[in-house]
Length: 523
Image 1 (spheres, rainbow, N blue to C red):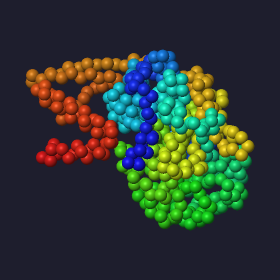
Image 2 (tube, one colour):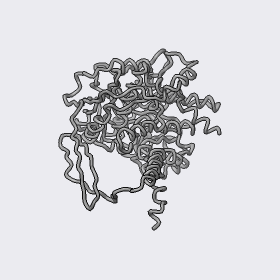
Image 3 (cartoon, rainbow, N blue to C red):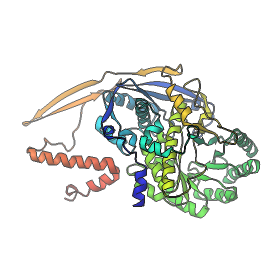
Image 4 (cartoon, rainbow, N blue to C red):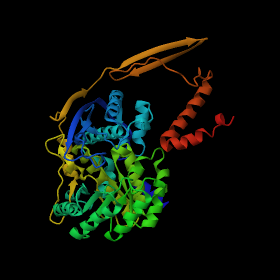
């Protein structure tokens, strides 16, 4: 009963009956290509010498509703994504054509399967077939458009008015902010890295994250941590990220050498994730998951139960890698209910995405705080979100990026909901750094083909999008002319609808388990 009540606290409540109805339609969906320059290659890049790593190409989405309100989204695949930039752009070209005229209703900000149902209902394709970065950008643009329609910001939209008013009774406007973790390039000697960290501490950062498993031995990484503690003391949180580059023995060697230095956590120390619990128990170090979450498909909750061990203390969640805010919110909710930190992290996106992440992180903080109060538990300290990549941006999509600062003497480096909303409201579609390639209402080829043989007939309707597609032929597998009796067709429709709901609600694995247990496969 307690767990059911806690899940209920995460669910946005409707303000009134009219919120069940569609609020508007998408009048137009379009995109442009933009280019952003980094000052240093991403830490996930294979080499730090390739100048191409400094340039990031992205897709800027604009969704216009029928009341002329606008929402922006961003898609920027990088090497940690499975999809390439060209693949993402091709998918966007197709999806944007399907979006024109689609109804947008107040159910979407629930982030509880609502977007998945919306995709299936309007596009007729499995939500899992959309690339993670593409779905994230689509959700971002639609949520921003809905927020503008409601004359609100994204965090307020997600909270809902009833929850928002209740949660904010003791929160002033100036306190609506989130803390940011600094990302440190670990190249250089231990003294040089420690000096960089000390400068960040003077700026106001109370949490830093360092990449490890890039030096010759784990002991050399441990020496860097030792030097940082000798330089800045124990007043800051230190996180390290190995990106699964160590063997079990190497990870244990590092753990033994840094035990006394009080790491907040070590992120993804080893590749075989089935050994991660063993590492927690043998090393005694707190662990965070990142790439492990990216690999989860289907039923998130079922998979996450494997990692309920108290030694796993944090979930590093990248919306662009997990497939949008809906999937990310589900993982964050699970983390909160299992007393783990949910760290929103960027993947070297522009200040547009960072501004949205600030509001999303604040929404998660408010929901987490509500659950902790109900359970009479203390909320986690040191939840600094992984948005420090803004320091690595040399040329932004706009002249001025997201404002990040220390609000007062003794405060911590962070960003406010107000400043992030100002950036979104003043965002310029016609920025000079947007490249020439643009897609608006592209013409789509539509074809209808009738086939008849042996007294049977069928009709195929095909839509194509893109510059070089055409359909040359089709092969039908396990096809049939259908059921003759109307009553049987109704029964089949009900069964198919039930199976579709099972697939959408519980994921592919549970669906396949049910499907292969039917009589069809017992013959």
